[in-house]
Each structure stands twice: as structure tokens, then as C-alpha cells.
Image (tube, helix red, strand yellow):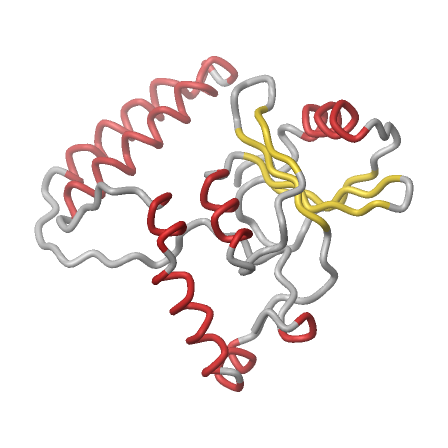
Length: 197
């Protein structure tokens, strides 16, 4: 499991620098997605997410489907960071979606048909399982390169495992991929009480 607090000190510096508030307290949202925080100081509460596609969040906020982006930038290592107002709420359940199906469909339709959102989505797509697998494996190798010096005893094992995965991915056949998730985080999404759905 990835370290969900890897950049907390950098995030704290970012908030101090941009908001001139120095006594930030952090907590983690439930779940296991990308690194994100609830941050609170001087009566201000924020939702902070690290390593996201900022332009996607800006487009979604512009059409009112996510909270506004208060600020965004980069951390010391180049990872993106966004700050949004904290919105108290809960994670939507399956029954929430089922009971408000028309509203959910309207949100999805708005997102899929908005030209600003479409402009920021990636143009390249993969229909073949093999191509998608190779891309995912390449991303995994890039991440591994950042961390391998920290665990030299296991480097050979992981490198060999990645080579084995590469061999397996090259045997993939078939096509028909569809998108299942496009990085819009629901940890800061208030469900019905704010009228978003």
C-alpha cells in the first residue's frame, strides 16, 4: 500500500506559503486513493490532493461538479497539488445512486457533454488490452525507479518481477476497453444535501 502521507510536510509548506497560516492540522480521508488530506487551521478547512491532473479538476469545478479549486501548484518534487474548500459529507452509497438515478444521470451527462471537460481528457486511448497493459506497466516501472534505491536488497526481485509481468502483458489479446474511473476524487464530494445531485 502506498504511503498516503509521503508529501505531508511539503503540503504543509505549500499551504503556509500560499495562505500565510502556519499551524495546520492534517487528517486523512477514508479510503486508499491518491494522497489526499483534510487540513485545518485558524478556522479554515481545506481538502488537499497530491498528484492529480489539475486541468481536469479546474474544468469540473468550472461547471459546478466539484468544489472550486482555491489554489493549485507543484510540490518540490514536481507533483501537482490542488486545494479546495472542505465540504462535510459522506461517501455516496449504491442506494443513494439508485434512489437519485435521474440526478446522477444528469451529472454524468453534463460531465460527458461539456466541451471544457472533453478538452482536458487524454486524446490517446487504448482499445487493445495489450497496449493498455504495456502503458500501465511502464507507469509502474517509472514509479519503481523512484523508490528502488531505498530498498537495495529487493531490487533484483522487483526488477525480475516487472520483467515477468512484461512477458505476460505481451501475451494479452483482445480488445474492448472502456473507461471506469477518471481521477475525480469523491472524498470531498458532498452528496445530496448541497444540491450537487
